[in-house]
Figure 1 (cartoon, helix red, strand yellow):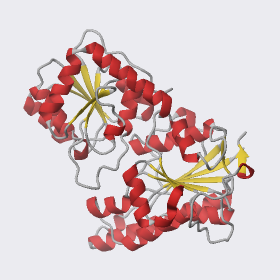
Figure 2 (cartoon, one colour):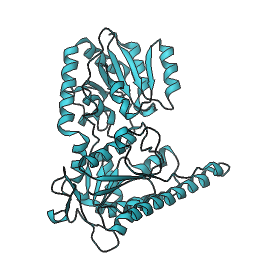
Figure 3 (cartoon, helix red, strand yellow):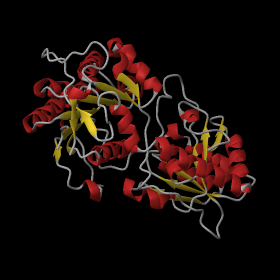
Figure 4 (cartoon, helix red, strand yellow):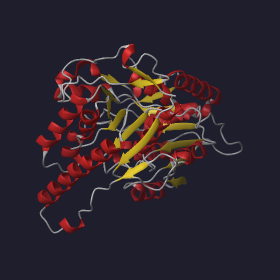
Length: 421
């Protein structure tokens, strides 16, 4: 049985948490297991929402030390020390994976980690680097980054060592290529997916006003405040259910009260509870606001989940969203940050339930056909192994000891395959 080392060195991603990133970690583990692989998870953060079907996955948990002792330091020095701890713990994760052994290494990209490069070099096995966001730019723009050069060098080291660099969107792929132009055809775009077995079509609750659903972390870039403003100007009778929490939660509750809205705030739920949270909804929304250039790289997991539940989607026409929501096919697209337009689109579907059901059925068909997590992993492995459904790549390492791959995918022929059984 093929041994998989899954590495996650990002302290912002709890492997067994409720965030979309947590769902991504769990579903890739499931997809590998579906292929018969035996994964071990090496992570800096776990959380408590361990799914029953992943409870037997071996976990090596090495947390990044708390910065409590550094709080009296100037901010720049405090941040620098935290970055150094991230480097250290990523190295510790790599050392554990090397000691345990693995046939394949898969790492979720994080700042300052070179774990994938270290493991692939030490064990002579192929590595897959999954890139979900331009983390260096994110950190510098929205948080604090001291060692930018170190972060860039870590990215280049990881990319050079990877057989495949799987990016969730074209903008993310372009970002990787700007920093690592030699990555070439090893970079591929693999958007998020959805578990179509776990999330199944739901029917609107009978005997109540249509329910308009939002799922996600309550942060400004999700635009939930626009949804509340839309509800205040709606012409049809509908109610709002919000699943998730976050720093904007209190402000949104105050806004709802100020607008005289009764909103069903349900808080964050574990991924296993998402199907129940979606049940009975009528329409699902992704009311993203307008973004500045460079912030529209995300692959919205929630839209795939909405579609899997057979829900019509009303979403903002931003970023990758128009590539997922077919306007007047699986839902409706509206201009961002426009509560009047959002209300009109929702009203139109509330007034025409058959149209809403048709959109929902079309969305379900799309995700069933092409966006299961198994399909996503198949796209990641495509060309690296002949039968991506049942195989993972064996050694595509160049064998020169430095881990560098300066061209396209190497050694992807049948002779390099290993069957998982």
